[in-house]
Length: 339
Ligand code: NAD
Image 1 (cartoon, rainbow, N blue to C red):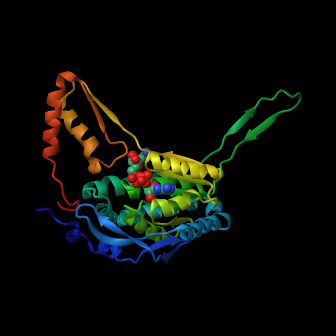
Image 2 (image 1 turned 30 degrees about the horizontal axis):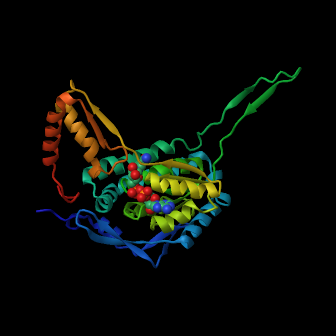
Image 3 (image 1 turned 120 degrees about the vertical axis):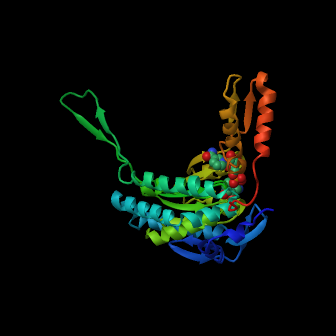
């Protein structure tokens, strides 16, 4: 019989599910009347409710990020100050590793080992790695060889924080994806409005609480949950952004790029892919088969670089298919917290 995740949750995770729908703007939690269910995909049961923010909340979040960038200490702070706060955030994520992992299991459907080790563990590592870049983003000295008699020239470039960054992420590894967006932007001195996927926002909301606890200045990080067509589209089209960074499907990415283009906002798009694997006749199948299976079944197959196409040499086709099918049959499905 399948075990249900809910019976296996820690007390801190239960408390995290108990919050009324809210968004994190200008360093404060703000209640939102409209809400959406957060659903555990292993049981199809709602486990909490998240805010369904609209254009008004997105606008408030962009304004808070703008104020923090123009008037707050963040971009002018010494790089060592930003580094210290990013490291403090990494320590808090490490402290709450189990809670964040359980929220991710509930929201995404991943097994607990992956949530704890790859996803939360990866987020901690990326925060610490990017923290080291704060204040160390160097410009260049330029040898200016213009041949004007009796003259010598010296040139240099400096890097400056870009401004307010909008970030939209998908549902498959929300915590790590949040940190991939936040950490480099924050290290550089930018301020951020982050919109997680309506399918998986719980860990990102918990992360917002840790940002507050770490003591980041108000408005440096803002988290607005809601649907793509409402909150996502409002953020992508907001003229107050200096940059939009998006990870998700190609179809949505096109819409984001079009919205950004209308405001001449810089855009970075990380879109969907189809990743081929090639199996040659002389491959060691004892090693290749688990590798191929792992690459397509990890995180229930919900990985942008999942090995979703397999090319097999005709001579070993039947054996490879048979062994892959047996490997898949031996996998056990169920609640991600079930041991
Ligand atoms: P999606 O495109 O449906 O949604 C991604 C995000 O965009 C969500 O937050 C969603 O709310 C938002 N969104 C939806 N419509 C929007 C709109 N009109 N304007 C602005 N935002 C909008 O993708 P998904 O189903 O959440 O994620 C799966 C996809 O992401 C797959 O295609 C996968 O390959 C891709 N992916 C890519 C990478 C990468 O690094 N390239 C990483 C992970 C996932």
